Amino acid sequence: MTTALVAPASTASAAATCNSWTTKFAADGYRFEIPSIGRNSGAFNCVLKLNDGYNGGGVQSAVFVLQGSLNRCHGGNLVQDGKYGPKTRDVVAWVTAAAGLPQPPEGFGAYTQAPAYFAIKWLGQRTVGGETRAVCRHLGTI
Image 1 (cartoon, rainbow, N blue to C red):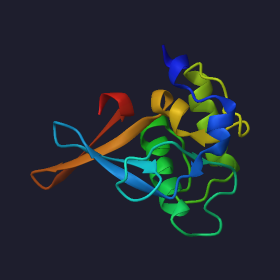
Image 2 (cartoon, one colour; image 1 turned 180 degrees about the vertical axis):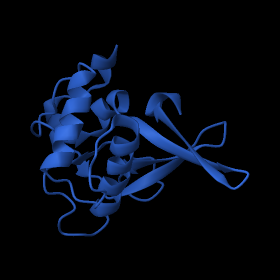
Image 3 (cartoon, rainbow, N blue to C red; image 1 turned 135 degrees about the vertical axis):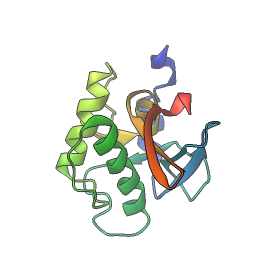
């Protein structure tokens, strides 16, 4: 029942811009960084739209962690620069569309936490014996 958790247009439009990330730890020791409002706040109801991050600030860190997961977990082939440009927008649109989710009301390819919760696999990492290991998981399974 993923449709019940997708925010309606008025709520998603009012969501604040993601300006940092929250670190979540899985029971098996993997660390995941998820875009949020404020550092380690757990406030995931946020939005990233075309051209966010171009003016610097914390928004770049939110876009940076999103791009990392899109690259490693979805073959995004993006420059991980912290800027939500057309290529990042297009990869988000592809991932959410492939999951059968409607595009957010902010426009085609905008990142919103509610639909991305189900669509995007997040990059998790942990170090074992000096070796960094990676895994990709949906937020709901972290």
